[in-house]
Amino acid sequence: MKEKRIAESFILGALLCVGLIVSAYVIAEGFTRFKAYERTVKVKGLAEREVHADVAIWPITFSVTADELSFLVEALTRQNDSVRDFLLQKGFSEKEISVSPPSFTDRQAQGYGDASRYRFRYTGRSTVSVYSEDIERIRQARGNLSELGSKGIAIAGENYEARTEYLYTKLNEVKPAMIESATNNARAVAEKFAADSGSRLGKIKRASQGQFSITDRDSNTPHIKKVRVVSTLEYYLVD
Image (cartoon, rainbow, N blue to C red; front, side, top):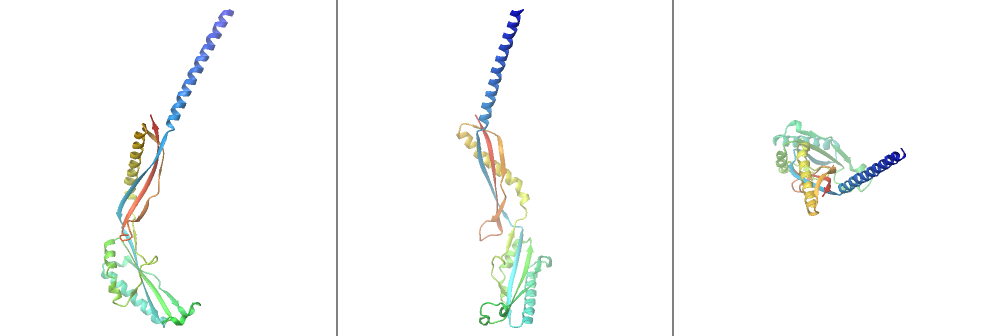
């Protein structure tokens, strides 16, 4: 009976040893695989596309000076009408044209500077704006502003407040294709890196999409835009 118990204990101990050895092997193998999957490569993929603006905002700003405020108001009103008629003649609709409230300045009431150096006491400023999807019509009309100058309307030069804005509002139409292109470009870079390092490209560990940016292609063609996005992907490398 005693010998039987000793044999059973020996067998149990042997099984436990085998189990521990197998468990250790499995854990070690899993750990090795885990460490292998920790080899990664992070790459960026760029996608760019040129598009044409589909909306334009064109402010036409002009000014008048006078010694009598009533005359100044009348002059601005007449010039607003002249600018509006000019735009209607160029093919813009009433809905595309808006007139902002005029502003007036009394140079003698400013409290600084020498008012006597100004020829006229009052100055007035008005802006007539066009909001249109007809980009080419706006570009052509802007080239004919000299017609207003010949009528005595002093058009202000373009600055930050009075510059023509060209907008691209159809970003959602190009987003899917550009994201796909950026992702494919990133994967191509990752595959080249993997091949050069003697590895194979595994699954994606992490991915992030950058913000879309819309900028002028250059300063001479603000109606042509450049859309840009960068995607960042991190892949596992496997042997």
